[in-house]
Image (cartoon, rainbow, N blue to C red; front, side, top):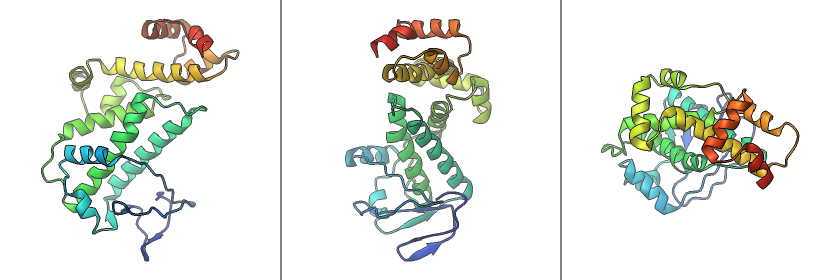
Length: 243
């Protein structure tokens, strides 16, 4: 429910809290519809994948518990964060004209989003007493999600570290240990991959390369062309020709 909504009715019970998470029990029919202030998004996961995520979170009993409840009242701040992150990720998935989605984008939708919601539910129904995934790992998932959904903005590693109350050294150590890269290289790879994806589905037109590069924060075309060729082994114009 949007932060500006007034109320909604579910299972013949009305709530006026914008921090309420509606719960459909496993296997139930989703019969909600979107209207102004209340938007319905459906993300489908295989049962095997859901089991993998819940086991990773130490929430093996969650399906059983969810059958007995139909809503969870979140903290207002927690609800705001979830709402904002979902908006950012969905906006990112829908931002490209041709609906191109990267591997990292799929990872956000299939792993980060459900983990965030499962974790929020578990905290309020006492279902994650034995945590398997460390809180530190959650934080860095947040960092990666933020990078992915703010590629169009002038973000850099210093700003990202400050936003998440981390030192730049801690950020660098995490990316090196988990992904064998630096946060700067990771951010660059995300941006260049997004640009390449757009090139591969767009028709060649005058000024397209410069327009797309500038959208992702590259304002010096010589530096952009070099970075692109170093990363993909070909110039942007070559990618467009192949597309």
